[in-house]
Image (cartoon, rainbow, N blue to C red; front, side, top):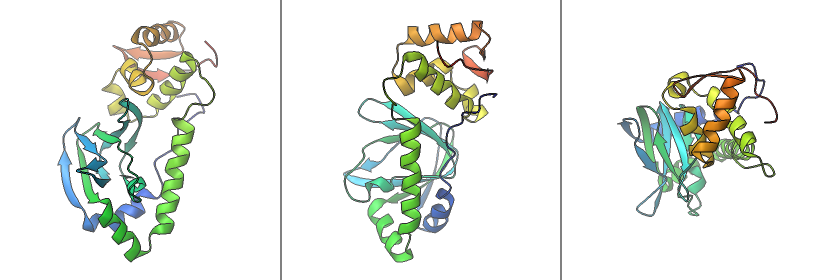
Length: 209
């Protein structure tokens, strides 16, 4: 990819947290496309992504917020019982550690992990602010441009397994016809390379459409 714009990498604090928490987790393996709720039976749940890739969705409108590759850690925002009732969906087969947030709270206190937790939360907030929250009122093209950059930085196996149109619409809720039209124009103009709807390469995306 020739563009210098890259999304933030995964949290540099996730692996350290996993090292502390994994011995207390129930471990399960999943197939692709399984849903993991952050609230189960009115209890917060946290998930250690030990192997594989997941996507994070906002439940209110099923908008895909981002994807995350192992090592990753989700659910600590529910420690204070003000639950964020979003959910994860496995993009690939995964190995995942499950830990109720009340148990997580006990481990944090026992091991003095609040500094590590705070750093992880600050990183995740920064990632949300810079890659998900809109800046002003972006045009449809600006939204598509950002998502193409993010898609190009996904794992190749995931990128090859999803059409660019589906990825963009899952994360923006733009109309299919509008997304397809702009993608076709970018491909015709030589700005991107695609094969059967899959994004192969981003050559150079114009700032304006």
